[in-house]
Length: 396
Ligand SMILES: *Cc1c(COP(=O)(O)O)cnc(C)c1O
Image (tube, rainbow, N blue to C red; front, side, top):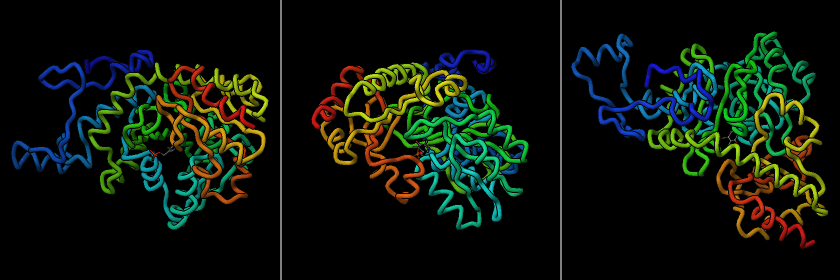
C-alpha cells in the first residue's frame, strides 16, 4: 500500500487508509510498538544510525513506528508534507515556540486563543525575552499595525473558542509573508475534516489531538503539521532533545480516531446546528454564537474557508452568572467539563473555568461574559441534548 499516493484520495478515504504500515504478520488493524529503544544488527549499524548515515529508529523519544503511522495519516489529511506528533496540544505550541523563536523576537497572537496558549506567550515565552502583542482575531488592521521588524509569526485559532469569531486565513497569510513572518493556525475546532489552513497559505498547523482527533476523550496528544523543511530543521530537533514526544499507545488511539474523524465531524456539525437554532428560539437565551447561523457576522467567510461549522455552540442567558450556573447544574445527561471534542456533549461556564485566569479586563475584551455558556455538542440525539438544556432554561 505504501506506493499509493493518498493525497489523490478524498479525506474520508485518507482517514481510513493512509499511513498504515503492515508488519510481516499482515494484521488488518494497526500494530502498536510500545518500545523505548531498538536493537542494532551490529556496532557498524549502530554507528551509521547515530551518525545519520543510515535511516532507522534509535530511541522512541526520537521516532517510533506507531507514532510515525499517525503522523503520516494526519499529514495526508491536512495536505501537508510532514506531521510531527507531540505529547499534548500545548507541547505542540511550545515546541513551535522553542523551534522558531529566540530572545528579542516578537509574536502576534489572537486575543481569542485557548487560555493556556495565551499564558504560554504572556508568561512563559516572555521569560525568554520574546514579546507578544495580542490583537482581535477578526481585525486585519490590528494585525497589520502590530507587525514589527522582529515579528517571527502570527498565531491564531479560527473559529475562535468560545465565541466563534472567524479569521480570514488567506489574508493573514499574505500579511505575514509580505513581512517575512509565518502564519500558524491552531486547527483544533475544525480539524482537517472541515478546514485545511495550509491550503489557504498557513505555514504550520498545530493540533490538540486530545479533542476531535481522538474524539472519545481517552488520550492527551498533539501535532505540528506543515512544511517539511521547517519542521525537520527547526522544530523536530527540539522535540528530539527536549522530549515533547507522543507515546506509542496514544499515537495508536489517535491513528484509529482519524478513521472516524470525517464521519464524526459531520454529525457534530449537524447536531450543533440543530441545537443552535433551538437555542435561538428560547426566550431566556439572549444571544447564540455559532458560525453556522446565517445571522453570524462572519457566516459567509466561514462558509468560504470551512466545509462545516464545527461542534462548538455558545450562548448567553438572561440574568448573568446565577442563571448560567442554573442551566449547567440542571442538566442530567450533558457532562459538566471544561473539555470539548468528544462524542459526549459537554457544558462549561468559561468565565469561571477556562478563562478564569484571565483578568476581568482581558475577559471583557474577549467577550467572555458571566452569562456565557459553552457547549461542546456531542453525538447523542439532538432532541435529547435540547431537552437537557430546556430543564434549566425554563426554570427562571
Ligand atoms: C485543548 C486545546 C489546546 C491544548 O491542547 P492539550 O492537548 O490540552 O494540551 C490547544 N488549543 C486548543 C484550541 C485547544 O482546545
